[in-house]
Image (cartoon, rainbow, N blue to C red; front, side):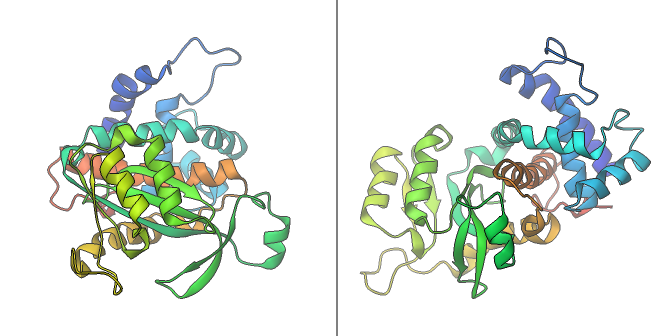
Length: 301
């Protein structure tokens, strides 16, 4: 483990222990049953290390590596089955940690928010689709940017300009983008400030959706103009690359499309884990005045 990743994990552990877990009601003691070998803060740090350092979707491979090389940092690393159960059960905790990191980042107060969605494939064959535990939750969808069909979920992400996740969720790709986004914003409305600008693509065009953003949230929806409407905002070719580069980081560096989840809880936790790794890197880069805030390459070796 290099010095940059070691510093990130140490700082993250202190932040989680002192400021995040107590507010959520998590403590080291007072739990019923046998004492856990890895406390909650250590678990989240180990999850971040997995995706920044190793990048493997195989938890058994990661645990073998961690038990061989990271015992100095994590003395009580559980076996693969125990680690897998802890991560699957920690989905809500991971989501709460992402929000806490976002709130502790200077870009939390930025006016601009980026909005888009991307495929999260969960199966490649018809036999997998028929036999998967995700049947009834996942579905078929089409990715226009890659001109391909997929089976799985769509990840909806609202982020700060440099890529810090603010609001996110998984949905069946057959559901409409505006309907899913509105449901997410209604649930997490406290994370949107009045006066903010939400930048989306043409797929979010709609009077009812725009009225919801304006009247219910007090924000402004900005998107490229459609061909069948009067000019309003123009085109956003360069700006739209911001959100695409965020998804590229999630897919290329953090292996989003190779999450390996086989259940709803597993997919949710593994996607959340990658968002947590990205959020931790951005959060640490802000606090260390790193020029490229979204870059996590300093932590991957």
